[in-house]
Length: 162
Ligand SMILES: Cc1cc2nc3c(=O)[nH]c(=O)nc-3n(C[C@H](O)[C@H](O)[C@H](O)COP(=O)(O)O)c2cc1C
Image 1 (tube, rainbow, N blue to C red):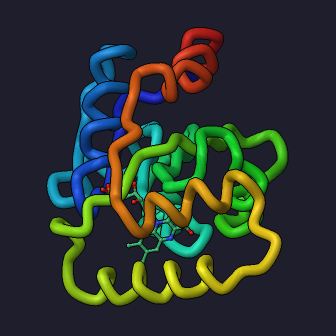
Image 2 (image 1 turned 135 degrees about the vertical axis):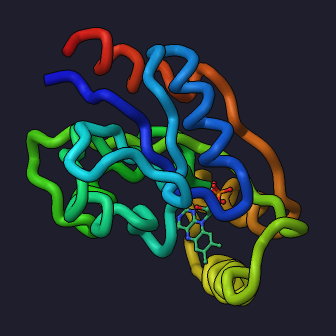
């Protein structure tokens, strides 16, 4: 069965933009967790990456028929699939995606600003960083916006093949 809706959770707005973009591309209605669809609905869940896990996924999985999970991240598109699979506890054949989004320090609320400081410190101290980790560190320090339609291509292909 195809999903009937997109449900998202967004802290600083990147996930919201991706959810609306995906809604336009698929024709699916888009809901935020603050204004959610009926429980049990078949959904695509989108949330932001927090320490390797997709924020809000576990709660969504309890209340909805989740058909796919998408994490928006600092890390490049497609590089966190196995990390998310492990940290969210979803099986091998379950559709998992990550799309690169961005960092907007001015919109970070409350404790999450502290979380970013810790993550930046951790990444800065890390020895032998890969090119991807260096790119992530630069985003953490300077901020940036990598939202693009191309990042959704793999998800749209998956959806169209359902
Ligand atoms: C506390 C915290 C932890 C984060 N951890 C990760 C992470 O482990 N990996 C990653 O790629 N991005 C991480 N991020 C970055 C966010 O997932 C990214 O900025 C996301 O696009 C924000 O989406 P939003 O604007 O919808 O809130 C973290 C952000 C915060 C605030």
